[in-house]
Length: 229
Length: 231
Image (cartoon, rainbow over all chains, first blue to last red; front, side):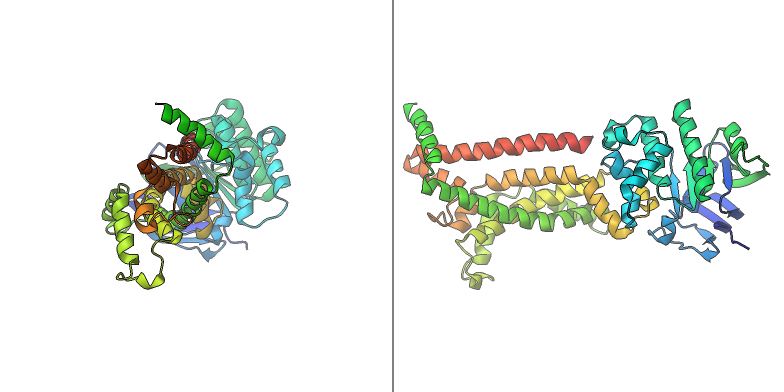
């Protein structure tokens, strides 16, 4: 049996002595879509940072593909498989091409330009028009899509998204959603989406976890047809 | 005021005719400032990066010392370098006193705090999301370090331009440890000082025009880099 992509066992996270997240057990399976719902401050972003291995938990165990993952926040091999897109992503001070190509270059990948162009097209940006633009020449929606392209180009095993469409207009939001779902279809990328858009979460997710005060208070398993996804 | 106008005219003639004495001073200035800049950048960027990026005990004290050294008087630097390089000093045996490398050492001490302080400020001012972004894109520790320097590149270039402006226009260090030796260690600033004392305005004005041109280029570059750094 294939082990879950990411598993959390009795994970607790504390900031300044205060417990902000407490998860007894959570599995993210390859190709699944998991939604995180809950009010602001409920622990969604903390959970995403833990799932992205960006910070170690205060206690508990995390595994990646069945093996214990580093509990350190130092960059490691797992960071090349799991990537996080936040609501207001930071773009590197370089061109759109430079931003999208960065992750490929640090991996020493070849065929960079073709993959960058394909990723830009996947998020609805014309590569010919946008590739040479500088980071400061983009609107908020374009910047968000460039940031998503920079992650999709890596073909990650897990793409974690924290309110990815909250500050976007409806057309940009639709493009971000389509691109993320396309990555799941093409590369079996597991998606973990934190959002207040319950309609979207219920439409696309296999499971929706409701968080409140750092606890998962409800877990809904949804049966969706492939057409809906 | 005729002597000034005449000095300007003669200054142009000296520059355009390739006067060897004038160009010797220009060459000496270019040589020492280049050596000093290479040393200041090689030492200053990593030290500034560490000061801005790392948290350690005594960081505030180090920062205060670096900031204080920003206004290190050039004659005091000249005095210290002289004391170390004179035959009675700890490095007297190296035979560096009254040479271009001696001036470069002093100018490095002058430029280093500028590079360290401005690089540290640039790194501190970087967006807090940068390390997380680089990590989640798969960069390792070394790649994160390099990308951080690249992100701060316009501010670091601004630091370099500012340090160059200070180095190229100083006179105290060049005079004290260079000795203002004609054809050897006479720089633009020491030559201006000497020629003005002799009442020879033409050479002074010619060299002054070169220095002003350098200042203009430095300022144009600095304002362009400032714009880029805040974008």
